[in-house]
Length: 105
Image (tube, rainbow, N blue to C red):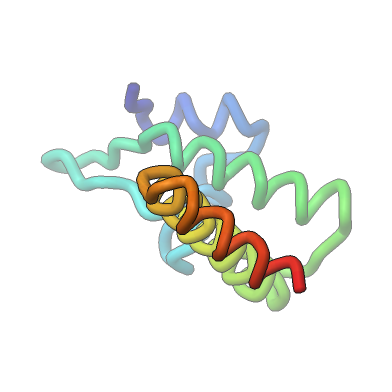
């Protein structure tokens, strides 16, 4: 699913110029399609997060990059933990038990 600039602005309840500023800041990273931008699901989620952080939590523009960086780090850590869990699940039971015993000690 992709949406155009006007549609994303409507979905997030911001002006198109505000959304354009977010793109210019690198907070939202659409794909260029000819003369227009295409915003994917991740862009929609990220724009909603930016709006929520700025409006509900009253975070100023200068702090938004820090918030986004922390969110990105959290997602990367979750992805890494998920990969470790999947790798551990493929190991024999005795190996899993030894690793879990060391992790819990």
